[in-house]
Figure (tube, rainbow, N blue to C red):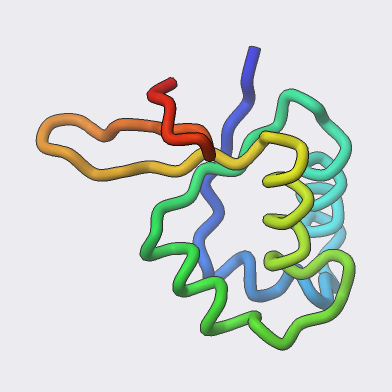
Length: 94
């Protein structure tokens, strides 16, 4: 069963230099669990990019997104009224 999570930019910006052990646990879970999926929107991806574009740490959100994309574990939300539609990276509705 998929375990998805939405991570706000206020949290994700701290991934490049995680000092809190809870951040480290979250990053490890996201990167090592094959059933862990990150849910994003276009707006959130833009926020990540504007905040963390120059981050080069292997735990920075841009590199995590890259890895999850390659692993097929990034889900994109497109807003529709009602409700939300969740798409995989190929555009297929989940």
